[in-house]
Image 1 (cartoon, rainbow, N blue to C red):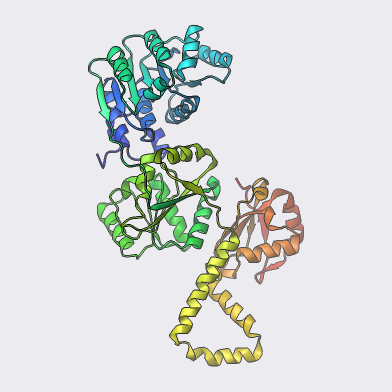
Image 2 (tube, rainbow, N blue to C red):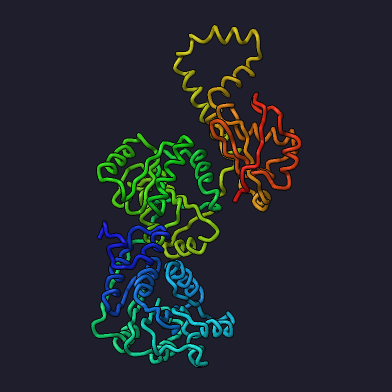
Length: 524
């Protein structure tokens, strides 16, 4: 089952394409077992904890199997709470993106009239709480006499919340030739009675053993980031923390390739591992990682299975994993052999509910951490440079240059000479995309500007920001991302300040070059 892929399970191309878009390469244990059984036509009793990927385990085969010939409701999915109903609805809507199926969440607290209106237009799958579903049945707004699937999600929770009568009434409202999929973390006697009474005799029982969901030796933190700033945020964290050896997880193979390429452009020594690479290539990459030839290994979940590298200081979830089990498996790559490890997770605003779920199920304390500022990055770079200088001084192998320094000292201030030499040597090191992600700047509308000055001209963000402030009175809160390439640069400027930039900076000199400024494209 280690090498099993979603395209081995019998799902159609529309579903597989959506799953690939979601970034999932390999099925979780319950997905690998349940999906083929449902596609074979059996009822299923699935015993698995929350956070193991069971929504996709029932959602994918249901969407794969239902007909699209009429506007009648073809599947009803019951969930204990409105929060879970919404969560299931959102995930299945993503899985159904390439199909024509219409889904509707129904729960208390939302307008029942609006829900009835939607049902009249034609809905294929209804996801709802037992109370609201029963209410819609009573009003004759929801007809379950032609459904193909009934799904009970977290059945034990529904019983604990007192929905047993509603569930039985809903089951009685359904046609007998439907398929029933029941999922529950535990199997109390009430669940067994319902299964025996309302499910087919040849129903398959799938039980997924609960793995340990705690990693006590790992300190866990998350960074709140915007998707467009994620890579820049990673660079800042790596520059300030300087992990000795880190595994960075991406959702997709394409994501791995793109991240490795971007990291190399920024001077980080990184290699990737994913399923499209040959076994020999992966082994070679892993050996180089073990030997510390490369400090950063960028991988997908499937490629990282079985990796056990001592002294891995950090695990970084560049992309949030699909389930809690994957999260625990990922961060378990660090904090081994009685040593402490550190795990960072980058979370976009849309992913906070998923992070909270992971935190709850894994019983982890995942603390929020502030992203490093540009000043933090520069300080870390300068500290690194000073460390190199100290090491050189301790080796006593610089005597050849002493006469040159004495000659320079007679002509110039030695402090200025030293600063100039360090600028020549290290400007590339401290050149960095600038975007401190502050609230004021992120609320602005930006225009992307092209400049004909780049890294080879010794341009860096600090120099550019000072230039903008001195010549156009544009301060750093009105500047977004700065991308400095070898021969040119791009900078996002607050749109209402572009006129000032053009009026005051064109034909000025920046880094000994006559400045040409053009509007490139509007920043997204």
